[in-house]
Structures are given as C-alpha cells and as structure tokens.
Image 1 (cartoon, helix red, strand yellow):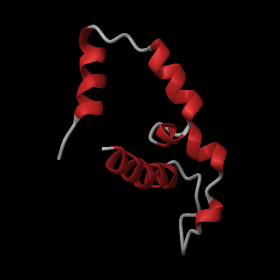
Image 2 (tube, one colour):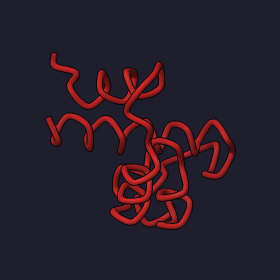
Image 3 (tube, helix red, strand yellow):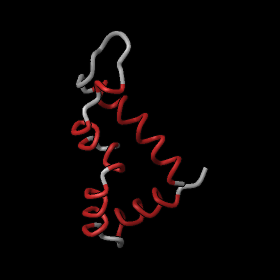
Image 4 (cartoon, helix red, strand yellow):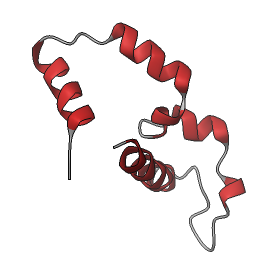
Length: 78
C-alpha cells in the first residue's frame, strides 16, 4: 500500500543518507537536518517527488525483466 511504501522510503532514505555521510555521524539527528534536496534525490526518497515519479512512469518500459520488477514492487503485499 502507499502507506507502507512511503513509511519504508522515509526510513530507508535517512539510513542511506547516514551511510553516505550526508548526515551527522554522532548524536541526535533532527528532522530539520535532512535537506529536502538530499531527501528527494536519494534512491529511496524519490517516491516523495511527484515529478520524478511522473517521469519514471513515462520512461519505464513495462515489458521485459525491469518491467516485471517494477510491477512486482508496486504490487508487493505483506
């Protein structure tokens, strides 16, 4: 569902930014310390960017292996 995808994307984006050393490596990291640009440009954070998702949908080939992976991701159920 959309709630599951956006929740997972929010968590994984911040962890990815932490691993890439784009966030402080010690102490409490406030939400305000994560820039919107870094968040939206992250491979996981892109799900929050409507323009990026529109372009991906327009450019995605729904045939072949990548198309099958995209359909599997979108339809994944717990």
